[in-house]
Image 1: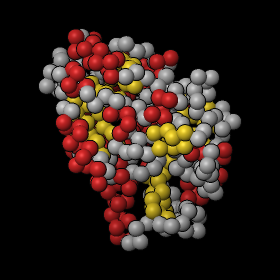
Image 2: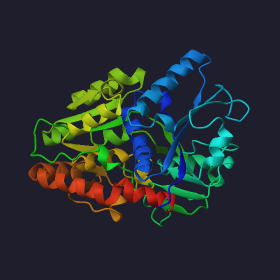
Image 3: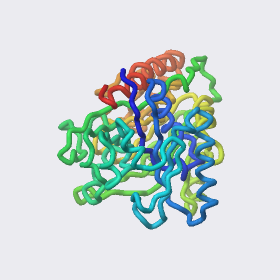
Length: 384
């Protein structure tokens, strides 16, 4: 494989320094590309606070995090005024490798543009542009009302494994969407297959929100509150331990936390407890399995979405119980990964995992290696 200069547009690393899961997701791409021998440049735009010292502190913290993984020299952070769109005239470039944005763009063989991080007119400076959609349905429906620069790419990829098929309701926008599995850089996740420890919880990490989209005149939930409340009675129904690291909106914390804890869930604050990639991995490692509850949009639109977080659980040998979004047409389920369509299915899945945990744990890791390995997924994304 020819080594290439690959720029990766990633949102919200500098602005989301305490989000261990988000950082872990980004690292799978950066470390995976580096492992394949490519020269990687992480590209992020941040809004200025109006105080240069504060902006510099955010950037320094971001670079220090990247430095732990040998990626400090691979970062390019672009600071733009708070109320302006990025342009060559108003940006300030923080980068050790390139002196300007134009130099970066001209030296890039491929731009991987995650979630439309880079938008016109800067987008067109890159010679070959690939859009990566990590939020199938949400992105495409948003594009019906907002100009995101989607059409200014050369290829379009999505983790919605079912996008483009007749039984998927995601609007294709007239584009040919290629699909890919979530990316896992396996050397970062050492499998830990061991006998079942009953004290370890079934867990997950999420944001709690009521957000909706309007699609064909109907509301469509894109928040996780609706998703998890479908399974809120699982602790009582199974007698098992459940733990949720959840970001709750400030004004709703007391009532929502009380509701979950009354149903038997242990609730922790992810920004305090798992505010780094290392802490995020430790949280997963001290879990017995994951309960992955999908946004209503993923389920109703039949997107085929499966979480990058679920892929990480499986890489560590942790089985996953996941809402069926249509992914089981594309990946083996039943052991290691159990697809469910409601609480009755989930109760059954919990029982199955408890009865033969060693088998489910082993197969979870095997599935991660077979489907999510960055050495398999990233070449397909790059088209090489």
